[in-house]
Length: 105
Image (cartoon, rainbow, N blue to C red; front, top):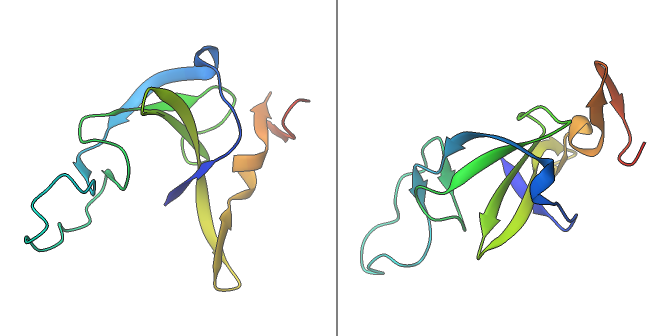
C-alpha cells in the first residue's frame, strides 16, 4: 500500500513508467453498483490507465509518483507498525551507492 506524501517532487526526479493503474475506485461509476474488487494496481484517486513512475534514487518498493489532477504527487510505501500504518524506512531515505541516505544528503 502507498499513501500520498506532502513532499514536493519535480518532473526531473521521475524515472521510467513502471506500471499503469489497472483499476480505480474513483466515484465516477454508478453508485448503485457493488464496490469493485480490490486487485493489484488498484488506485483510490488515480484514474485507470494513469502512469505510475519510479522516483530516482528510490526503489519502487519505497516510493512512486504519479500525476493527480495535473500535478505530480509522491506516494510512500507503507508498513504496519503498532496497529498503524507508517512509511517504510527506505521511503524516507534515498539510495546512493547502494546505501540509504536521508533526503537532501
